[in-house]
Image (cartoon, rainbow, N blue to C red; front, side, top):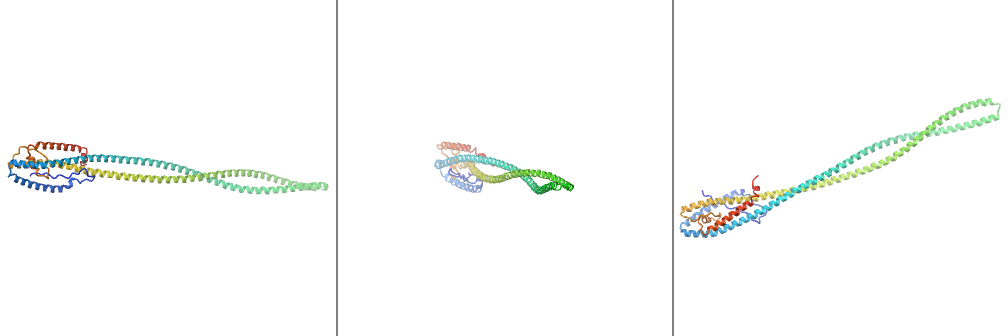
Length: 412
């Protein structure tokens, strides 16, 4: 069975944007239909040409083929040059875009790493501030515990001072009563002494009575003196207690002043605690805001990375389409060689003997070139052969340009 070349796929020009055509594998059904139609047209056209060639001489046939070659070779070579120049431009543009995408991906990765490092540093600062605030709160709590213990002790001392004040008042009342009794006793003693003096002057004969009365009075006076001495000792003790109470009141006053100072310091500490709590709230709000900004920046970076990934996939698809077009061109060349061999056999069977047989590229949509390739004139063959060699060299250089991006087209 004679193989026919497949139709050439559409190659995007230099003005094409970032949108790429789908992969060639998705057009297998369309290509098969186009190939069948092309095979039917080529077979019918070749049969018609064979029927027309049977009525011509060899010179007339060569003239007819020379005219066909002049019209077909120029347009085919021009189209191939235009296609290869377009492919070269697209390959260079794709290489620039790939390098730009790699630079953008590296910049995005570096930006993400910088953002992560800044987040780590901010978190460390926040933790250090929180630990400092925690230590300050612990010291304040210890100070409040000591202040509460001191306040409890002051309350106990105040209670004891109140009890001692009550005792002091009772002792003062007792001392006042004893002083009044002592004054009454001293007045009685003075009255008794005056009476004794009067009795000694007025009645010398009543000495015995007076002595008896004096003995009674003396015994009473002695008892009164003993009681007065006892009261004096008690008064001394009460005075000593009053001195102690005065000292205790002074100590209580000093303690009260100290408590006032401690109370003021406790109020200052409470205010400092409130300020620290406000600072902690502000720090927490700032940390939440910073974390929100970092979360938004990370989301934007993720979106940029996703866009870069989609652009990379799109570029890979486009490169795959270009690579498939190049492979399709190679397959077309192989199919053309097979078709030319079959055409040569058919010409030999018809009785034509071309003097020079050259292999030149023939496009699928121009079936007349199948006869031009095998029946070209000798004066036109060297130029066509040199142009074909030039085109083959350009194609090899184009494949060499595509070599750096070839690993991106291979399936993972």
